[in-house]
Length: 116
Image (tube, rainbow, N blue to C red; front, top):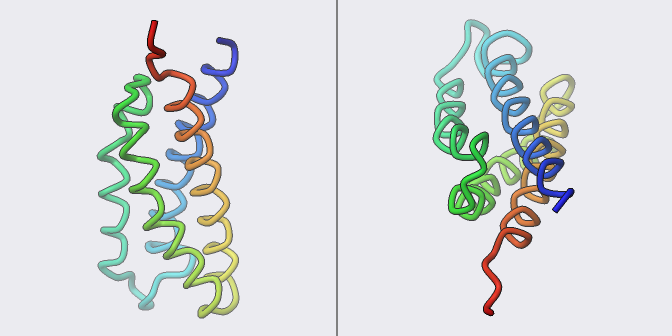
């Protein structure tokens, strides 16, 4: 199927972009505290599905589609409650997480084994 490479690229690039966004957000752009905070550690769980997503493992796509909803929720809450640059970064987090979610669920759907 020709859609599978596009879904893999979409999922991989949105996950990598979300990793860099979280690192930049909590370290330099708009940290919770002026000198940075432990919220930068929220990036570490994003590394768990990275290699499985890049290699195209269906099982990783399945569980990562549910896992990313935590970041979607955080983005929505912070977009609603924060102000300024932090709220804008939260909206970008929401966009990246939605793109990742859509790519992962469609990839899992298109790679399922159909009964013969």
